[in-house]
Length: 262
Image 1 (cartoon, rainbow, N blue to C red):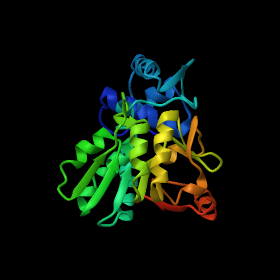
Image 2 (spheres, helix red, strand yellow; image 1 turned 180 degrees about the horizontal axis):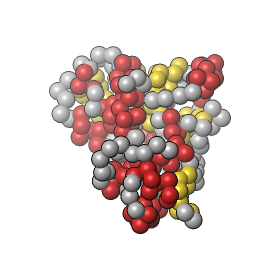
Image 3 (cartoon, rainbow, N blue to C red; image 1 turned 30 degrees about the horizontal axis):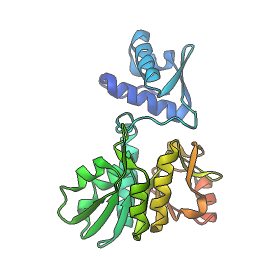
């Protein structure tokens, strides 16, 4: 574990970095973090306590491990700035898969939000989404048509779920669905902790000709509670980083892999 970049990090930035280190290493120690950030053990213990209280990690004697329960899902505000660079790389790669005049679905999520921010580059798009933050972003773009799915607002997740939105989707056919995911593996496909969210995602997939999964490398090889897409339903995986053997395996299974480049 190398040291942090020059300059003092704000508390929130430090906690985000702790979560990035956990995603990479699965566990951290107080001693390692003190050395990495050049701060006191009291500061690190306070950070770990707050992250534990938020359900983002599990404190252990002398450190912490990442929360691995299949039903665990951090709130949108907690995820928004986590690995932002990786999400932006994915978005920059995914925008090249959209053509002027496309009808698309944007699934709810912080990675699809980064893609939404780039849609000003395209013309005459129709965008169907259940993400309230995505709608707020897109309403400033003059060249887009926006359809907001109905349903019950899922508090703390900035989106709608439920049968109202699913019924609306049943009458639509779109060219491409850009789906976020909480976890992704070859055996389980794309999964999410919330079963109601999974049902909405399934309805999105059924309405689309092509399914494009946006996935951070941190989510590979993991599984959450509810599956919403099997491997054979996914046409393309857009990811920020992937090992070559995993890429080859996915391509052999019929999934095209697009890796974001800086």
